[in-house]
Length: 168
Image (tube, rainbow, N blue to C red; front, side, top):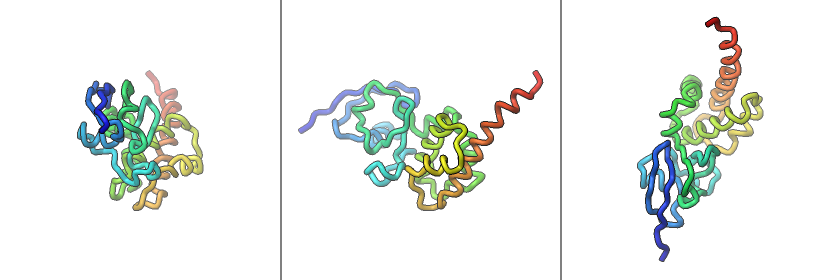
């Protein structure tokens, strides 16, 4: 029988030290051990994206990543992302476009969209569709999600121009 491993990591900015079984998935650790229920279990094969979290600043599938792999790392779940306010504009756009009907896929969608906003701030609509294609939604048909992400991209592109034109 496998023995538990002691891991140390930061989750949403808070130091954590816990014993985990070697085969426990990161999303199960977050949900069961830390009570962070925002990341969901969907397919458990890394296909649907409902379990998406950040590991050292890059999104990963929490159902494919073992908790022991996060030892010494920084993990950010949707709870941490939301509390930091980094995606408030994106979340507001999701609401405006009704891009979160049942809400099951929304945390993973927001995590993926946040990474897109950072890495491809000039993304076209087709690039947004491609980037978000790794996350499944059974309610919205994706148009509303893509609309919300595109609106946020456009607003963020306009923000620096507006700030440059502002008088002190």
